[in-house]
Length: 306
Image (cartoon, rainbow, N blue to C red; front, side, top):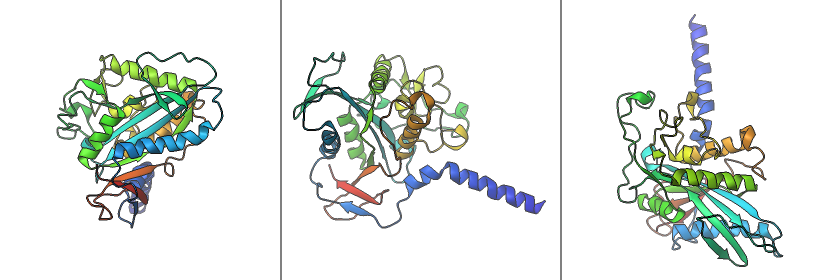
């Protein structure tokens, strides 16, 4: 019986660490890390926008753009230890107009220009409405609330969809590590689903709650993770045994990408391959140029301080 019990225990922990493998990879930060300080004095928001432009522009080519192109850029930020109250997952969606025909603009989205290309862009970054002035997030409050959602006393809050600039400011203010994946090219249907999700959030009927297990199904309140996940449906929790455990920060966005690539109804929306681990690009806070970095969860990262 002892041998059987020992084997069962070993099997349980193998399953446990297999299911948490992605979070453990995202958390690893004890090894020697390389940090690039070449853009240290460039604001983080500008660094991120410049990176997106540099990644998308070569794909559009030098000649006239004969058809519209669509891209998604998933993001996350987190602190050391990936505490849920200091972590966030969000996504940007971009539509680049074709040159040879007039575009039917998306109502409510401003038109912008980069070089010879005109484009629309929007963000899905779901947080409490007053988060810029009151960035104190209640995630779990109550005995056993991480496992038992009925025990969680955190309130439901009015939500708001934050812009990319606002969201990056939150990360900078908290001195968090910020991760960017992609850009990934998508079909028009993927862009349309993103617009539909933005419209749903902007209606104001759905509220915000970090632990949305009891409220998501009826669209009463959802978290940042589920605001961006799936686009055409509010996906399950993910994490250990479907509880949503550790599905925040880098892990939450990585889980969204897995959902995007594995769910049958989304397989046709992504036009390229996704490598959840190797596609990730990380920015880290450093108090001084060339100095120590308080938290770096990546093998290589780029530094920022404002």
